[in-house]
Length: 255
Ligand SMILES: NC(=O)c1ccc[n+]([C@@H]2O[C@H](COP(=O)([O-])OP(=O)(O)OC[C@H]3O[C@@H](n4cnc5c(N)ncnc54)[C@H](OP(=O)(O)O)[C@@H]3O)[C@@H](O)[C@H]2O)c1
Image 1: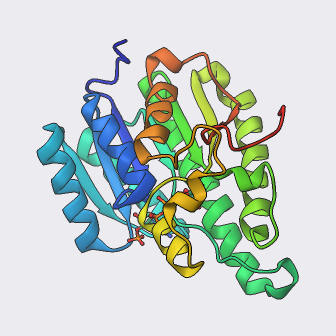
Image 2: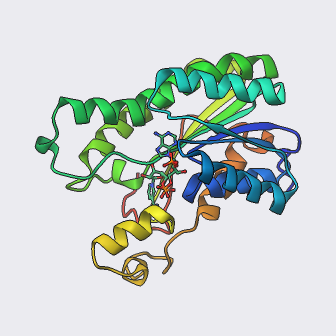
């Protein structure tokens, strides 16, 4: 199936490594022009160079911290200045710290809200006018299945991503007539530098995680990227307002 992404412009946040990198790589393989964003410039530029070399696509690195309001506006503006349009935005980054809900003070909660919720609000607000000009577009939020099946210790993420789900559902109702879709992906366990760190810290190996997953393996960034590519493409234009787990069957629930 040709997704019809050739020549389209995508902005992928948190794209210097892990899931975001995999998404940017896949969109570039599909012929999109891709702006990639992250905080640390050297790693970001290296990632952009590698994607450009391996796919032949035009990749534009933009340093930004999506916890900062002005950076959210700037990353969208710079993408449009460089490529002349914007059709797709992928909201992705790191995650707030783990720990007991009642152990976090207001400042930790404020940071989590800025990172997980306000980044999505601000990037959507900045991107939508350009998508309207382009005649439509697709927004995808990357969260986690811990939002759908909360676990002790993941409360900062679960609470703020639940708000993202509410935002995305409402936005899908308000933006549908402009042919702008917004969907949320809830990954299970995905092999990234972040998961390697968690594995090391907990004294486990990757195989320990794989054992509990019905499909028998930890996911890859490409597993997540394949769905993102469909959702932001013209072929996925009738899918909006959904939350889709991509988890190898890990979430044991009918919803
Ligand atoms: N890996 C998993 O198993 C898994 C499972 C479910 C959900 N998730 C979620 O998926 C997302 C990506 O996870 P990952 O494993 O790919 O993480 P990762 O390997 O740590 O990569 C995170 C990326 O986001 C960038 N980033 C972090 N904070 C940022 C900020 N404030 N502004 C801009 N860029 C930022 C990082 O670069 P800089 O540090 O240079 O900014 C990096 O490029 C996270 O929200 C995570 O919770 C992951």
